[in-house]
Amino acid sequence: MGRFKFVLSRPIQLIPVLFGISIVTFVMVHSIPGDPVRTLLGSKATPEAIERIRAEFGLDQPVWLQYVYFLENLTQGEMGVSVVYKVPVLQLVFDRLPATLFLLGYGVTLALLFTIPLAIVATLYRGRLPDHLIRVLSTSGLGFPVFWLGIMLMIVFSVWLGLFPVSGFGEGFFGHLHSLFLPSFAIALALSAVLTRNLRASLLAELDSDHISTARAKGLPARWIFVRHVFRNSLIPTINLLGVNLGWLIGGTVVVESVFSVPGLGSLLVQSIFARDYMIVQMITLVFACATVMINFLVDVATVSLDPRIKL
Image (cartoon, rainbow, N blue to C red; front, side, top):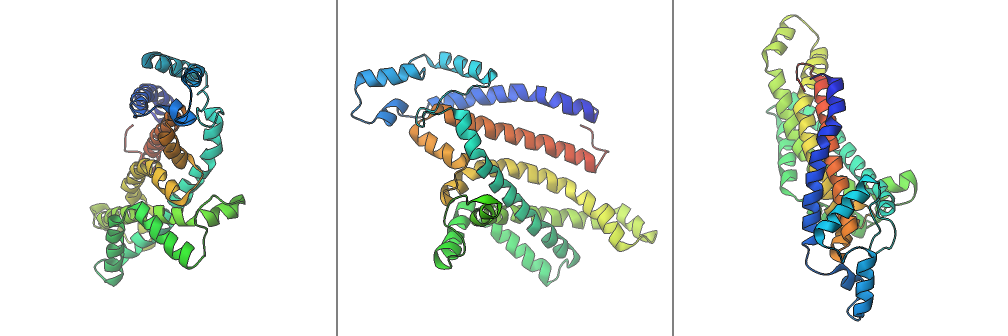
């Protein structure tokens, strides 16, 4: 399949995927124990007030009919109104989206800044002290959960040393960089541990391959061989692994944002689950699902761009 046809056909292929995700999300959200209206109004609410709020948000309808209304609103670009915040769900999501995107982009950027030099150094010093140290560090990074790393970083650099704020998003670009450094660093440590091991193994496999031996026999410069053939070919499995882990990271922001009180979609999702705010939970879940599918699509395109032999 040509690249152009692939790009055009992929959005159509996403429709049944997102439809299935919407059904699963809707059923799971409505399976959460508790009543959102009683949670909102409190234990002293009168039956009349409860019924009025249920009718206002359509919660007095059968579940299947609520799903039909949900799909109808979705096709019209409407996601309803939050039961708790009393504002349109889309507005809430758009207000929180920048913090989550900034956090993910910051974490991935730091992870790549760690991964590429470490993997290259480990490859060039294969079997020697730098290689052993980097492998120990990457193996150790795999054993620590992100939330634990975040808490430890917060204790050391925020509470003890006072170098970074404990929570928040900051003001302006540099304020965001400062406020989100610790959660992004925690994400980067966990992500780079996986990527460094993978990229090192790919680099070594490429260095030992026959076509690299042929290039050396032809007298090509070692730096040119490394950059043009070894490094470029080694990126393909690492990019695929990065795509898989980005999907995991999108879900992981729920934990990281909650630990550092970042006003993003993850913390909003946790608050909405506890408040049984169905509309917000459904919307954020769909946003995360769309983002994961889109990342996989971009990974496929990047893979083919690096190696035209791969067919889509």
